[in-house]
Image (cartoon, rainbow, N blue to C red):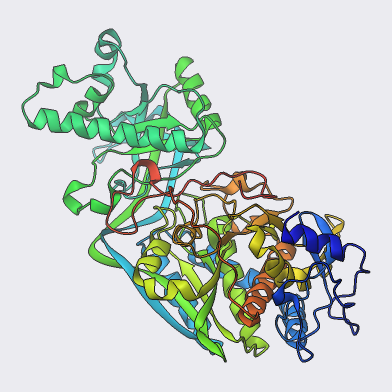
Length: 591
């Protein structure tokens, strides 16, 4: 039996004590106490319930933060929560926040001003520069029907003549996306729809109709988000290669199909996600683009129902057309990209740190506001800072609140931080990342050596937030995972784990379906669940405060290999988005 199991067995017979109550825990048994479990007479009494491996037990007797401060944190977070106001600002007021975009920089600066307004030290810290800023403006697509009619017109000479009038009647709005850093339109582009030819016979049959037409790409088997983004990237790359070959002297007749149609003056390409969700990524090599190397292609991925609507009416011979208006703006760089960092200085060990974080950047497809990925985690981080400032918390160690950027392109902001602050890494107790959507912070995976510290740190949150919808308390389960933190490598905790700093991705538990909004047109403010985000903000604040007041840094685990994402700066972001690909779904455990 390991030490944690022995402690749990020793504690199992103890009566559960109320949160921050008046009593103290009974003396520990003679069988199990670890050295750090011995509480001096002047240590705060943390009389709370911990949840370890799914079982409620009395909290381990490890000195943590001041009980009065913890009570004030809970009161402030429950009675004066601003977390939904932060989310509203980031989503409905600002909108999606693509790495390097003007909106992301606005969000960086807004967050810095918020932190400073609460009395925190705050700064913008650049981790790289990118050569080309991309900003997506309002973008629409719709199916229209062409109606022609003849009317009588009387000229100035009194002679009546026939005049043909062409009108376009909107019949269906299309939900779609196009890759970030791809070309937009110069006003609405309207054209008939032609199926992509795949044989010479098909090409000969339609080549006279291709000029100005939208090419409907044959639907492929469903492959999910990653596959859709890779297909978009592959299509862009194959058309770029075709242009290069022709520029080098290859006759257009020798270019394969359907790529050859780009030389017939087509308007662009329409494919389907094979899903009612449309996912957004980036063009290949987005971080090396210049104004001269942006692809001239217009490429859309539309939801399956819109694709079927277009395809079936083509089969019926209806004279439908598609009209697309994509307002894309490019600004040549270099464009600096920043993490926003705020700090509450420690009173006794200011050069030791606990980090609370979430990534501020998002994808920017039409319709998306970057809410659950990751406006929610950013709002939780901001609110945790506000709460601690509001109650005048005085942690012994410093607490950093970091809003990462470049996460979607491969954890670039967090990797840049690790690279730039190598000297600080041994003194970072823990890094917490909230990036699992709008569910609540329901647990943490932890190496066995860390379980008791984390159980003590999170215990005050338990049995405080009761959901009448879920009919349960929103408690925090600490899961022992052996000699390492058993977590994935697909968010901003991973670069820290790779160098031996304990990095944690919160298990997010609850009724929300994360995949509904993840990188899609559905990711809007309305997905936010206030009771969950309130719990998460308080949980983040209490956990960070307690660990900042604990006797020691969180015990280390064995370093973990980091495999996810691209380089921290300047590397290829990869096709179709190039960023971290989290295993998603139910968030009871980080998969």
